[in-house]
Length: 507
Ligand SMILES: Nc1nc2c(ncn2[C@@H]2O[C@H](COP(=O)(O)OP(=O)(O)OP(=O)(O)O)[C@@H](O)[C@H]2O)c(=O)[nH]1
Image (cartoon, rainbow, N blue to C red; front, side, top):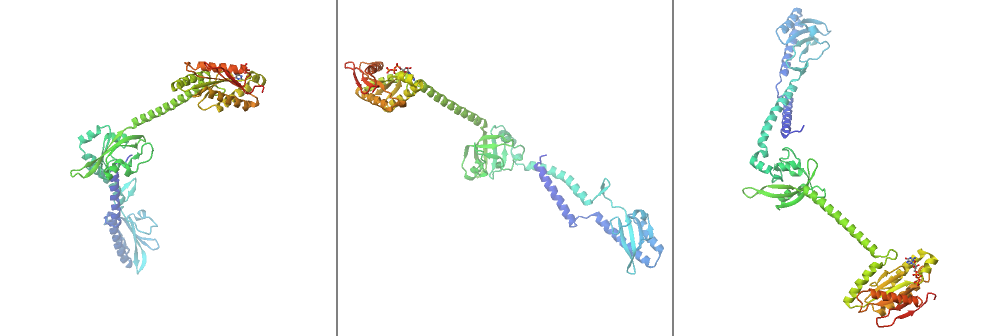
């Protein structure tokens, strides 16, 4: 069961009251009937003992009997009385003493008292008196002590009355009760949470929306500081210390707080993302008397934003993957798998582009066609795998020898083309010669491999690169015809074909 404030206060007041009663009793301020009755009984027995001492001295048996009978008959509270000698023998009895007196008792209680009877300053015997039980409250035959009865009574009845009184009083003291209903209703219809704090940051009012969202429930939040709730910095999970909460900063620094984002872990354990707006409340004399805080719940929007940005990130990633796969496909489609230089299709496209650029720039463009000499023999003698290795090695030598701006392509099986932008026919012939020497000197795969070369240049009458390539191919054919391992310059439209043989395949 949840303790309400009224119950807690009642418990405190009842405990305090009982403590006061116990202290008062301890120092004897509470008059008690049983104490008084005990004192009177003691006096009575003392008087009887004195009278019996006189009677014993005479000695008068009848006097003793008469004293005891008088004591029993004239006192309503006395049930029996007896005079017992020191040797334990009863001298006189009044009433049903033998049944009522508990043998062996040698000290007095409030119901059975004994006192010595003295003769010649020596103990002669004792007078024994049995009294009626004192009136009192008993439960199941067990007598309850008066003080305990008082404490239980105060505990129950006092507790009930205190609780009723305090509950009623709290209704008047409740700060919430001083807010007019129309103000409260107006705040309760708002969908955003509203808190009104006094200048010591204690909650004076909160509306229904705040109570529902924060799951604070009940009136317990009044008079507390909102920092008792679990506020966190957004996206970090770090708890915000009380002084750093927006409304505290506003009260301390007087700087307005607008659209600040915080997280609230609710009573139900849910995390809300809230935007906070705070503004000061001033009294008639323009002094700060509190602060009004409003909360907008943007948890759903934040969640959707997060999902959206995750989706965008995923889309970005897959776009990158598609682009990279496209690049890969483009590369595979345009490059030769064995040598990694441009394949025939890509080379043709490249030659068209370079031709157009050269024409536009008014720059020369040349082309070298290369073919490995007697390659069939290599395949036949050393196998196809060795043939592949030699093709790769020759391309590597060509790429190493030409300039970076030149483009090497695989034109056919063991035939290659090199496009040389901004290069005259003479320079192209010189470069072809260098390539021929380089291939010969390379001893690809340990074999004496040579290549034949045909060189041509673009001419003004040409409208596409094909004639230039064809002429270079024709020049290459001529090199083969001339004995291989040589460079042949294609015939210009007006000039003669020139072939230079440096070294034959046979040496
Ligand atoms: N290993 C290998 N051989 C190839 C490849 N492409 C073409 N060839 C072979 O290269 C050889 C070319 O032979 P031919 O066209 O007769 O010319 P050649 O033997 O080089 O003689 P010349 O060109 O006249 O010096 C053929 O046997 C083709 O099978 C390739 O990618 N790998």
